[in-house]
Image (cartoon, rainbow, N blue to C red; front, top):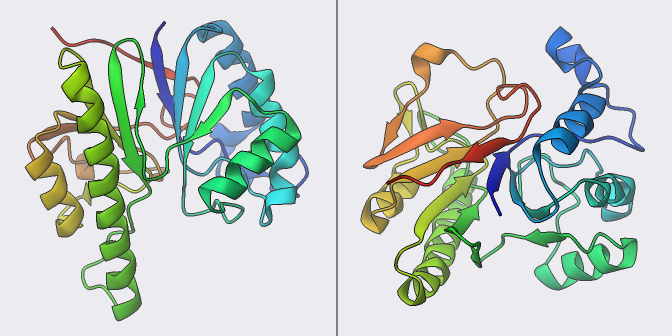
Length: 237
């Protein structure tokens, strides 16, 4: 029962949104995801998908993409990305999942999950700017509170299973180059988490990736960065 991670699947089973406009690396990306996933993930494994799952603008437009997810092996845990406009309340998300029969999918949204080896926390986060607008500041505050919430849920699980490492998944990076989302970083620093995984960044400059954030090692898991193959997370001794 292994844990895998990936972000930015950008599925578009019913949407006219070809991703190869962003470069040759995206050609046939959905088929590559399918083949790599089938060859890598077993039915008993868990895969965290850190945002930007579907290009559907409305939840009905994401149905085919969730049926695609259901066709893939493993338990899928999805958090929100900046392009997941179909995202709803937890109640509506669960109803949608059950309606389309995507029973292997759960949502990481103000909660936490426990696997055989890890405890999983996460939220979307927000974009990095030198100076936030008032509206941006409100979103950062909301995402910071959601991060606190998921960490509380995760630490409650960890009290019962102290041997399990708590991991944090974000869609947006908490830092890139000399830009930092300080409220998010402060919560991460206070949490004592040791590993963070994030997506969102395409064609990222390796020289600007920040590999240590708020006392934790951070790793980019965008699908194109991983070669469209879920990455296995190893237990650290």
